[in-house]
Length: 345
Image 1 (cartoon, rainbow, N blue to C red):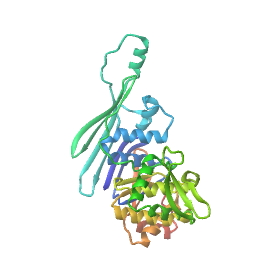
Image 2: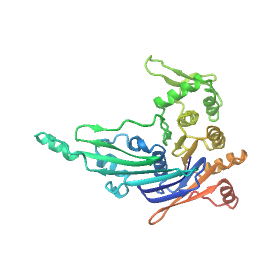
Image 3: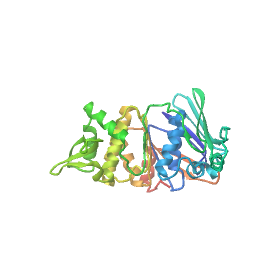
Image 4: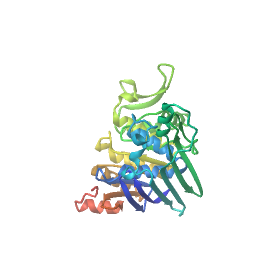
């Protein structure tokens, strides 16, 4: 579990250092403060060996139509001031003092024999390589390279699934597989209980394959029968994604971008209560971003009701040469609320 992190020259962050991370961390700040960028850096520190592949998947979520093989279009924006040669650096430490470090930059592509012809020369000019060095116990190095015709990527080291939830819920194959495992283990009721927070008529959840090809998630509604989850709105999909992410034992870190999206404010405290209990039971670390002061207060009420001191609220303030991170525990947030002071920036 990370307790501190430093990020340099990643996206809009020149330098950011944060200490005092907890089990559940709610990141707040203005739109340009770097909330999502910080969380992306933390996700790469979770899997430094696979950092390039993690970053690729995060970029595809931001820009699904971008061409991965076009370095300037796809990769260059992740580096501050588009300086890919300088690259970016991130490091962190856990509660045992163990360090993890990561550096990533563009390097010269490997020399190659170029056949004659104008097409080959054009391809050679487009070639590039992205290298990352990492240290977690031992040192290592991997790269992603494009030689003008094909993309070369390393084999994934970690078998753990992505713990990332974007602002718009996406029900993917990994989520369907996670639900299947939960139902096999008799734990499908967890998802049903959470879905009832936003629709009291939910009575069950099923995996069906109406076309005989791929399974899809269906929700059983009283009086209406089975309905595809995809037709139930953003809130239901958000809750489903959250439930299977936190219930999957291989996802020791879960990142939730814009956690309040699609969820009515009246349900937020109950959902935060479930996050508190699930993260404590699984010893999982949660990072989430929000624009909502009500979301912050709902989280504090939920943790206070359980006497849980595991919540941290991290406010980011972008300054001239760095981004300042101020960490509040639940008691400080409650004190600010009593004084009528908003802490979200």
